[in-house]
Amino acid sequence: MRSTLGSALQLIRFPLMSVEEFAQNAAQCGLLSDREVVNLFLYYTVNPKPQVGYVDRPRSVISGKESVVSRFQRTENRWGYCGTSDRIKFTVDQQIYVVGLGLYGSVHGPHEYEVQIRIIHCGTGRTLAENDTSFVCDGTAAANRVCFREPVEILSGVTYIASACLKGPDSFYGTKGLRRIVHQAAEVTFQFTYAAMNNNGTSVEDGQIPEIIFYTAKH
Image (cartoon, rainbow, N blue to C red):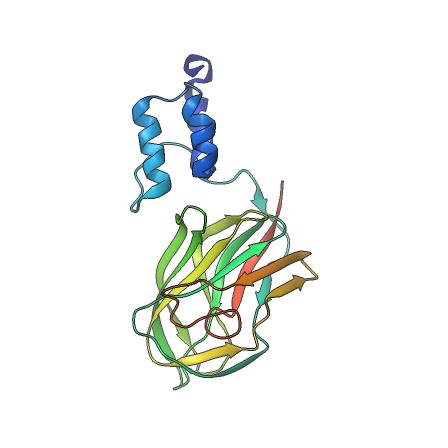
C-alpha cells in the first residue's frame, strides 16, 4: 500500500481524524509504522504537538458571507480577570468554520488587552486552535473581534469549548444569555452549555465571549 501511494501518503488527513477514529481504523490497518502511529497519538493528546508530516487542513473550503452568533441580550459592567480563562461549551447542527471570537473590552475607556483564545474538543480535551494575541477596545460595550490564525473546522453534533484568557482591566459582560440560538441567515442552530471548572464565572446566562464569528462550509 505504501509503495502504491508513494508521496500521496502525506496527503491523507490523519490529523483531522478524532483519536477514536484513528485508533479504531487507521492505527490498525497496517499502513503506518509503529513510530508513525505513536507520533499521531501524541499529536492528538499533547501540546506542543509533534510534527507528523500529514496534511492538517480540511478539504472543505469556507465560502459565502461571514456570520456572527451573539449569545447575550444585554450588557452590564463589570467583569474582572485573574488569569483564569472564560469558557463556554457549544455545539452546532451543521459543519461550520470558526474564524474568531467576539470579546468585551474595558469599562474604563480605550485599553489594550493581552488574550489567548482557544477552541477545545470536549471529547478528547485536545486544543484544536489557539492564538496568543492582543486587541484594543474603544471603551464601549461593543464586542471586539479576535481571530485565530486559520479557520477552525467545527463538526455537527460535536461539543467544543470556546476559551478566552484575558489580561487587562475590568470589562463589560453579557447577561440574559440564550441556551439555543437559531441563526436564520446561515441556517445553523447553536446550543450553549456550561463549561464546568476554571471558567472565571462565565456561564450560559452571564459572562464573557458574547460572539462566535464563523463561516458555513461548502464542499
